[in-house]
Image (cartoon, rainbow, N blue to C red; front, top):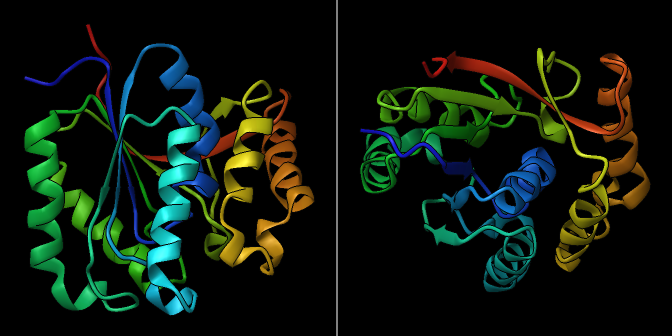
Length: 207
């Protein structure tokens, strides 16, 4: 039996979740949802100090109201090589939490780790009624969302959380104006304020 107000957010690397659905998680956490984030690698290929990256993402996620941060250490850039183990790891969290909703990565992303997380999610999250794929900069320009979450009140918190990733501050997509521009663009698409967009993999509506 699923828990009606539990969410599991999956990311391949530190910062994926914050970029893709950080505002949404902050919004749902404030509304009383129990949010758990699971990061599958330490992001070792993206910085000199992988421990720093893990600390950055924990700080960022906790600032958004995420109640649990599960950090795994699968090999960065090689998740596709251990797909069965990835499925088992995610499946164990699904069994423990029994979430109502999972936020995962986009199957058309150009980063192989992101695609692997999506593929593993499709198997490991079979009991979950709602599975939504979020976008990251490596999913541009192929990400075409059909579900939108307005985050105008949470955008500042998302920007602040992303700023916690000081090891990544030189990357263009981590800059505040780029984060805000992406949110405003998604909102313009559906005639609302700043938003995050999602592609549903599965949506079973509650009775």
